[in-house]
Length: 76
Image 1 (tube, rainbow, N blue to C red):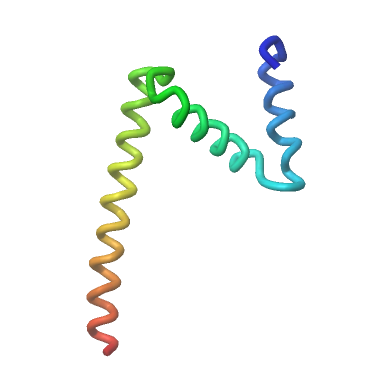
Image 2 (cartoon, rainbow, N blue to C red):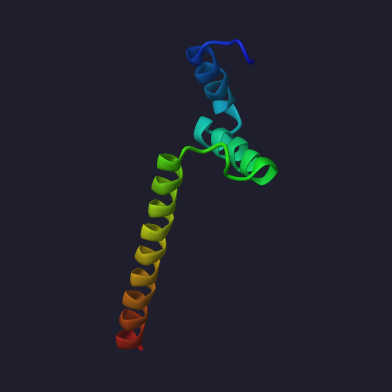
């Protein structure tokens, strides 16, 4: 698939819809690439965006846990 067009590659990933979503297929492929090659293939901008998203998700998850603990304490 090295010489296939971007559109053709997109259609190929979407063809996995019957078994799993194309997004899940792409995430699996990206995860395997990161595991194999590290993060060097990402641009600095992509790495910054990913790092920011991970930090934001962690902060959000922490806030939800604290909020849910307070709700559970009041309920018991």
